[in-house]
Image (cartoon, rainbow, N blue to C red; front, side, top):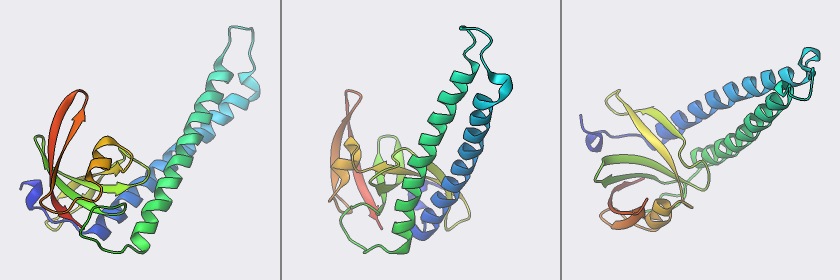
Amino acid sequence: MAQELISVSKSEVLKGLLDRLASEIAGLTASARSAHQAATHEESKAEDRHDTFAIEASYLAAGQSARVLELEKVRGEVEGYLAGFTPSDRIAPGCLVGYQSDEGFHWVLMAKSGGGFRALVSSSVQEKVPVQILSIHSPLGGELLGLRVGDDCEVEIKGVVKEFMVLRVE
């Protein structure tokens, strides 16, 4: 079945994104904890100036911890959209948008942060549908803001101008 024919529930999309975020946060938290333990363990002490295991483990722990903080921010934003959102016919942060491009039909959740995060969510026909968070600060996100169903826009991406048509706004 073509994606444009699959109906998705905004609340199911938000719940699916929250589930995926929770899973990602749990995995990264465990990895960061493990890397931190490796960096601070007695056996990780450098044997000479060329032994960088502990330093590398600490960098890894710091990077994973920073990613957890980013994802926590995104989770808070998505939870806010689930708790309450004023419907609009114009695209704004919190809107679930279906658009058509040369590559096909896509579902995106417009958000202030978390651009690029993806999840497979349930649809009306029990088929999983990919949904991506699209940052309003991205070139495409910025162009879509304020548009309505039937509107289109052009965006230059990697030197190529692409056309996008809005088919659904929820």
